Each structure stands twice: as structure tokens, then as C-alpha cells.
Length: 259
Image 1 (cartoon, rainbow, N blue to C red):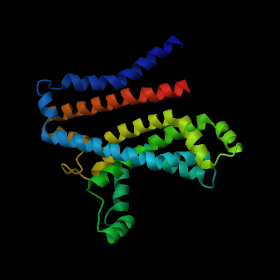
Image 2 (cartoon, helix red, strand yellow):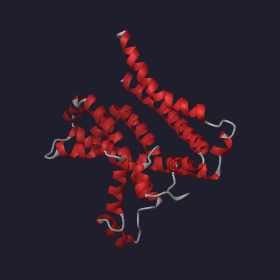
Image 3 (cartoon, helix red, strand yellow):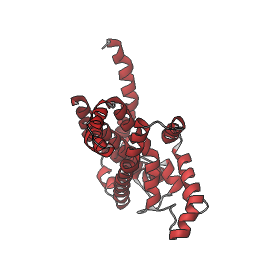
Image 4 (cartoon, rainbow, N blue to C red):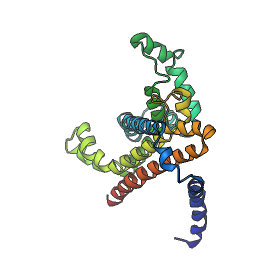
């Protein structure tokens, strides 16, 4: 590798790492345990972890098949479907929240039908938090898994099919084992993105303690009243995200390399 690459690489790392260092330097380490163990902080952290895990499961259930269809199918309109699937990656999250609100809210076409049939309204509930997180995080899983499927190719699947294996058997016995590293990487990214989701959540779910106020929303609220509290909670988010990525993503990468 050319040595000159270390210079821009170092600058890039600094752009990411130095702001985190700035948080640590500014943090009130004496009050830190008190700030991160307050009732509001623990409630927000528990809600964030629970909703992020649920949204990641939804990403797996729906984003996994979606990635497989995008990678293995050819149908009219595919070139239009893929940009729509990836739209949340570039769309401002608050715009996504408004889109969800005016789709599933009381005045939205889907929300009106849902309320008529079940009497349940989605906005400003924990369900709204999960949907907002799923909306912004599913493309991360789709991109990772679709890339893994395309990299794996179709050679082994074709051989299994010529030997008489059904499409379901080929998918279960051949395709899934081949893309497990990519799937694991995508799940980690989806969970981390859901954990840090803010814009779509506040627009679609609001900020109600114990119901919709996740840790990012609590950080936003605390920055006005207690800067030290906001910094402490921000560090909690940083630590959780680093632990998730550091523990889970290398295993996925190692599995990919071993293959």
C-alpha cells in the first residue's frame, strides 16, 4: 500500500475520532455515574435497546427477502424499485417521519383504514418508534445483503438446481450459508442506525417519556436544560454503538474472509 495513503487516512480518522474525544474532554466525569443512571436515562436507554432490537428483527424479516429479490430477480421496474428502497439513505430523517405521519396518521390513507378496522392509531406510540427506526435502517441491511448475494454469484445455486433441488432448498441450504457474513454485517449496521435514530422518530412518534422518548430524543431535550446531562447520555450512545460494532461486525468480516 502506498505510504502517502496514510496521510488522508489519518485525516479521515481524525474527523471521526476527534469529536468523540471532545465529548469525553467536556464531560463532567464526577457526575457521570449519577447522570447516566437517572430514571429518565435508564428508561430511555431501555426503550432504545428494545425498539432497536425489534426494528432490526423487522429489517431481517422484510429486508432480507427484499434484498434477495433485488439481487436474484429481473422484472420490469427493477431499476425504479431499487432507488425507492434506498431512498431513506439519502432522505432527511425528519422528512421520512413526516411521510410516515401523513401515511399512518389519522389523516393518512393507511392510518384511516387502520383506525377504522382496529381503533388503533400509530403515531405517538412505541409502535411508531419501531416503524420510524425500521424505515431508516432497513436500507443498510438491504445494501449489505444484496452486495453479499451479488458477490457470492449464482454458480453453486445453479449446480444445486441442476441436481434437482427445489428453489426453497437451494435458498436454505446454499444461498443463506454463503451470505451469512453479509447478513450479520447488515444486521449490525441496521441495529446501530436504529439505535441512533432521531429525526423520523420525533416527527412521527413525538417524545413521551417511557413510550417514545428514546435516548437520542432525551439527549436533544437535555441539551437545553442540562448540557452535562446531554453529554453524558451522548457518551452512553457512543459506548453502546462502539461495543455493538466492535463485537459483532469483525465476526461477520472474519466469516467473509474465511469463505
